[in-house]
Image (cartoon, rainbow, N blue to C red):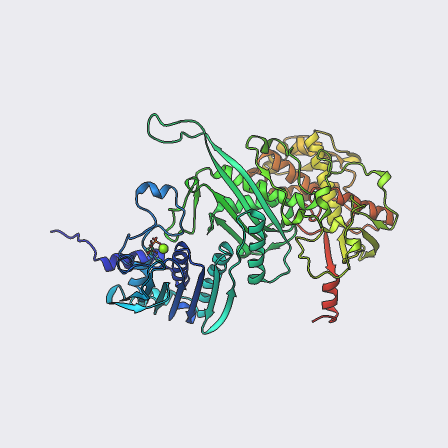
Length: 640
Ligand code: ADP
Ligand code: MG
């Protein structure tokens, strides 16, 4: 008996809808992507009841002829690709030819469209209900396309039941629209929810060069999320070389292929982090994506500038040859896969890291160590934070020694802590409460003169600048300074200073811990922790770094071990492992609540100024907090 039969078109569409259309936000996404692919200059989105009762997307794009308006509702009908090979290099948002028929199969659907090019004022209207064509007629319409999707899943009660509350569904829609608006600042977006206007974002015309695009993006960010954000501009490009053969066919050129990679956008300043990935916006060729590799790369780039378990705030655009990325791996096109995943990841991490370092020290010179030499990526130096009103572009720290000896010739007057480029300090000429300058464009805190006022709670150093109040966490600052000192020593293969204990102590460990410690002995030794094997599971502790003030040295070693184990050291490469050990040792440093005299505090600030990453401790907590006059005025109710 034959039991297999072909499914009807309608059922096939509903099955496709199961993958592509998860919820109202997926409808919005597919329709807006179509508008963007149709070169729309204006997109208007209207939803009712979280998109359950209505999603309407209207655009002024290319529009469709009557034939196309009918054809676009067939499955696998698309104008965006023709042949299988086209799948290898997709330059549009859509390409699957599935969205419209899928949506039309699970809703009451009306498409009204008129070709932009056509002279006739008449367009076409197609009405479909649950996949059944009800009507096709001529209809007066403005050039462009409008799609109405009513009663989503009305014919699939099971799917309808899975929808969340209206506010939740609305939030998903709004989230997607924000991403689209960030990716396309040149398109005007209007968003209406239940009859109320949520956004009206004007089109931002800008040039195609990165500074102009950064400016446009910043403006979009401002209108979506408000003004005061500490964001650093990123502008990085590199060439990825591949050693794979150029093609499968015999006789094709087997030489190395190259593709260009560009990363631009904004990232949160050091110490700025979020509890979730919600403010982490990543785009690949303008497509919002989720990609584990990129997530890791970001965290790697931040390294010590981010607290553990926290996520960076960012809006980053990766532009890469479409042939170097596969977008056809997820039905909703949410995920992408890079052909050279490792390389992309490494370069993204590098771009982030260089941006963070530049905050403290201006554009970097060419020598960044072995990682960067083979591909020769360059960062450009025209990001807003290096424009004329910032002195940092003129400031270069000595590359080999982060904490070089302070030059006494430049020594500041005792109570004023001047930045390295004291001759330039522009802040002293600016009227104090400046509301125009956004934080990222402003002069970095450590590049302006700071005056020492005192210490509160034996921990927080109070300083003032011409911009307002500054608090410094002396423990965090000291930790950062020590950490970078240690890394420098490790890099130079120097032995860190170490202080012998009057009475060496023995430390007994479990078998597992013992083998772990045995592996770390050389690094610990170089960092000044004198441990040696004394038996199968026993170690002799006879020296500590001088800054560790441990009343009970054995407890110090055990606590350090616990932290190292918790940090999952074994998964890291050797170099990261060393950094982790250094970080852990530093935690036990320190001028936690030690009373420090004025000159010591000044030395602390000065040492911090020479750090590569001065604005966070090695664990990503901020070392400095600034409260400018505007914020103070707000708190005291002097301004609205
Ligand atoms: P895909 O976007 O993958 O091609 P869709 O089902 O989303 O598949 O759309 C099918 C086709 O309909 C598109 O390729 C495009 O030619 C046309 N189309 C859809 N929406 C619009 C629109 N807003 N403006 C102009 N053409 C559109
Ligand atoms: Mg589409």
